[in-house]
Length: 250
Ligand SMILES: C[S@@+](CC[C@H](N)C(=O)[O-])C[C@H]1O[C@@H](n2cnc3c(N)ncnc32)[C@H](O)[C@@H]1O
Image (cartoon, rainbow, N blue to C red; front, side, top):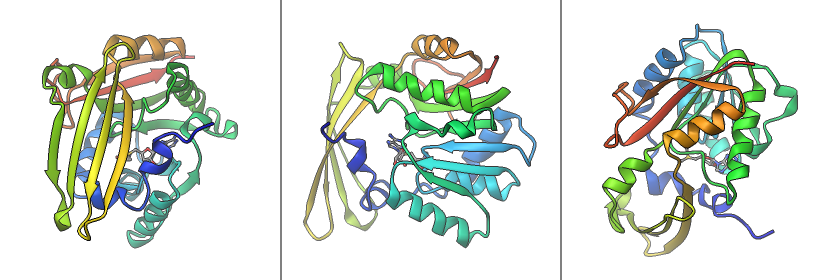
């Protein structure tokens, strides 16, 4: 099978071209712990944990944290970051469709944040992630999903964008909305300080809240709260984020 975009995208170039987001993590984790409502000591899985910015912050607050991610490069950063903050994390390199079966009913909470869902070619594969999430939660356990809000993307659509990162890295993006498949299909070009160019595709399934709700309910996850941002803003068509909190019912 041909390689998929996310197998290459999150390599050693990812953090320099996107920023590490470390400064925002404490505020985001403050919101996460309030939204999940779990006491310190609870077992939390950070699914697609990346370089561990939320996982480490949660561990520093006394949670038992596991992190799963496909990127060896980012997991190495997470390990290094955990060591520098003197906290313990359990980290595994795995595809999010394959949360280990030995982790069934293990977690009080699972998070998947910063648009780390919707990467797969088939909707059934994206749903498989949710099925594994539900299986890995204890009964009554809570799941927090944070993705870009499809309604915002549509209302504020721009087909060409550029930004400048630290070190003078230039990021240019051309986006097409594939309305038939409800996917944003981009090509991102990064111009590195030494003049090299990285050209990378990114394809993300944009889910409506109604679709998320239908997928969740097929796996006994009942939505309890929906927010439009990291300060607990109301979710509307103009929210940048769609943050959904759900509870495993059976
Ligand atoms: C946008 S980043 C978000 C990372 C992290 N949650 C954060 O907020 O910093 C997406 C993450 O998903 C991971 N990822 C991509 N495809 C994956 C897959 N199939 N299975 C597990 N992790 C995957 C990437 O390696 C990356 O760490």
